[in-house]
Image (cartoon, rainbow over all chains, first blue to last red; front, top):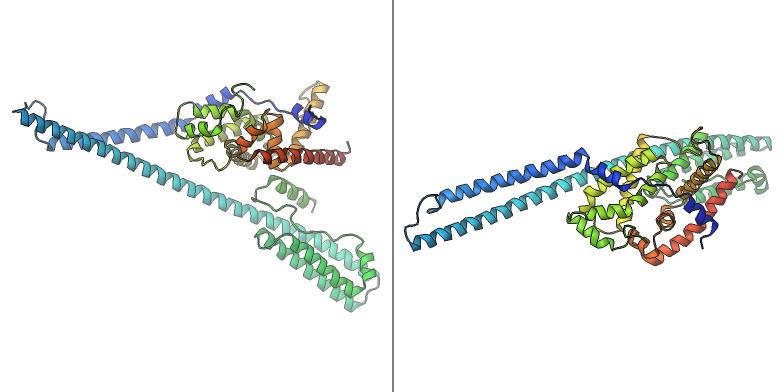
Length: 251
Length: 186
């Protein structure tokens, strides 16, 4: 018996197109034809090499010429041995061609794999840098606004000038350290708990400076965490991207 | 389950045949997983069927070319899905479209059909919000009608893992579903 949510998911099952259509389209792809043609060209080249090798060998071997009759039984046996030798040489050449083909294919595959890996790594690096800068720009904008609001409230609460300057200094340091932490988090040097530690330390410093009561009244809420919301496991997490697109577009 | 449904014979032997270029082996794998891969792609490309067909074709072409290098460290379906996911990402990068909540105006005059489409899109959104390790087994079970053993084989993980992921997947889906309804005031 399926429960209500199971049934909901089942009802949302999308239709899939006929596999035959996709398979036919796959078979009709021009790239497939090119791969096939390349294989045939390679095979033809191999046959040409084989034929040339056999021809050269045959020319070198006595008694292998067409139309020259065997003079005696000994000659016939020698001729058979020669032909067996030719066949052996043919098999050896075939093995050689196959091994050259395999080595070439493996080398090509390795080169393509390396190129693809490198391109992906570069792309991921660019992506990561792009999101890091965007994240930092967002934090700077919001943090500057929040800092101004907090300082204005401290001023309104009648904090003296010296304490005001010191509080500004602490808050500015917090902002700079948060940006550094974001960079470290993107580079995997720091985990996300660094943000909580920083927030706690800043809060303690401000409490000592302004008096716990005043600061609690001023904040009234938990400080905002500037950490990325996910660990960006492979730097390509679509949900994370979408989250930051939404966050940063709010400015 | 019909003979052409996923997991009737062991993937390993068919994959091995496909790697060795045995005629028809790749077609067996294609027949087994085509629909599941397509539905997965459809979620990634935000429900755009035309895009999903293009992406599926490209993905299967790459799967066909790469099957010789498939080392079997994961299940064949999980590997095929990784390729399909990369293709979907490429498509999304080329076509930076936003998720569409409602069908375009005038898509259908049938109110019931519109409600069904809307509800399906919400389910797809919720499935997209689920971590993949939970969403994939759920979709394989409920959409592809696969058993625990078949899902375990397709993903290359133990049956116990599938069981716990299905359980946690259902819990998380429920949480996401309820949160979505709260967000939308439904």
